[in-house]
Length: 195
Image (cartoon, rainbow, N blue to C red; front, side):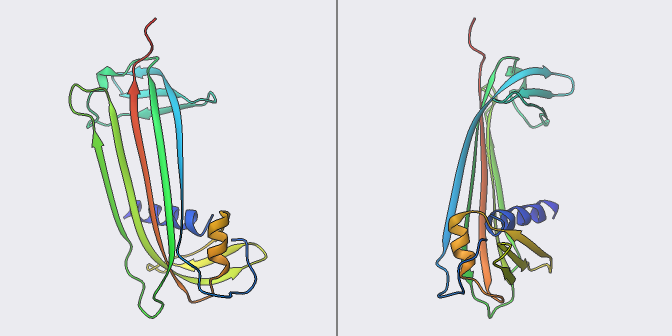
């Protein structure tokens, strides 16, 4: 339940939270989709085999400690100096939904894939969420959209992405909007270069 709520908040934040306003609504907005891929490399600074904690440094020098769960296979193959190739992908699609029907319950799907025993550590996972919200208000001065989800939670978000601004600028109070959000991550270990 908490994963679902946080994913819904993330989807709403990304979709409606990424609105500058256009003039009054001229026509119904066309379905819109945006996506982004981010790639980075982290270096393994240290590995604590007892606590299964891995200290990583990012490309800008920041540090992050991760704890590998018991289901992570091939943990013993991770060493200081190894590199983790990380790829994050996010996409959101928005479209008008029928306003004459009650809001459906949010739907979600998640999946993961791990390396087989003996292989170099790698993992991939995704989360997909679909939710329909009711538009309560659009404030063109603050470029924000206020909406309510099926659980009755009301939120106000600013819209920043130009394509989503165009979509939001054509909305009106009472519209139902379907948000489809997917986020994925893939992690691949590269052993430290030979010295």
